[in-house]
Image (cartoon, rainbow, N blue to C red; front, top):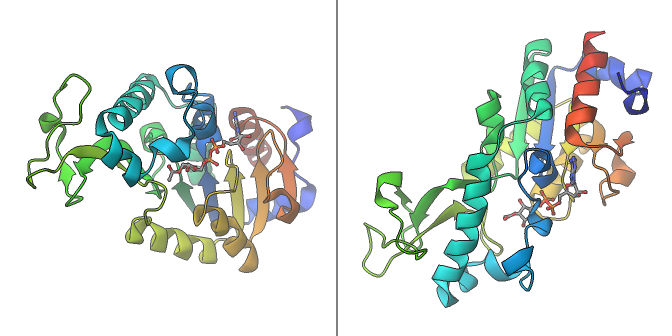
Length: 251
Ligand code: OAD
């Protein structure tokens, strides 16, 4: 076991006795599965854009094919990816404690593929598509390759398929955010994993858990605005730190 990732005794006690663990994950959680983090995803062809220039309704209106192509590349990375040891550590956590809620900003479905039971997708799922006008989901059978152009929507004249993800300037799915807030309020232990803690409203959830009495542990190789609120910060990668925490819990 990597001792550099040792939980403080008081925190290990709190985790062992936790009734409900709230886990917020961000793009860093998927990095070791080979999916570029959101702000690292602008390499190569895309280097000249900022994420805010592609992940918006305005960008899609202006150039649907460009935005669709960027998401095609991200979808390919997601299809090729496999969950890593950190995802499986969170699945194991469910077998050790009464309740674990995973609240993710990731759109890749890796927590579900690993086998986590309660997963709340705050920012949608990149493998799904929806009509850009009616927002109704469009089945995969409809999404044929159209020379990298977004297919037409089956629902609304002039509508196009777009990824079923939340873009800058859009509101989060209400059900998902309500469920996430309820879990944060109820939790007695919170893990924030692989997120910059910059994008609202997701970034406010660990603070909500903290306000309602949860202990807070951050896992991120870099400092974030959440770090100063955390009871302990691990400056390591998600897979190694999460597996180490599970080992300590089982010991
Ligand atoms: P970012 O891509 O902004 O940041 C990734 C974070 O993961 C950084 O803080 C890294 O230091 C950290 N990190 C990198 N590798 C890691 C590893 N192996 N283990 C642990 N941490 C690691 O991603 P998010 O903060 O998740 O939203 O971005 C939040 C949201 O911003 C995204 O969901 C997306 C974007 O706007 C929407 O598209 C609505």
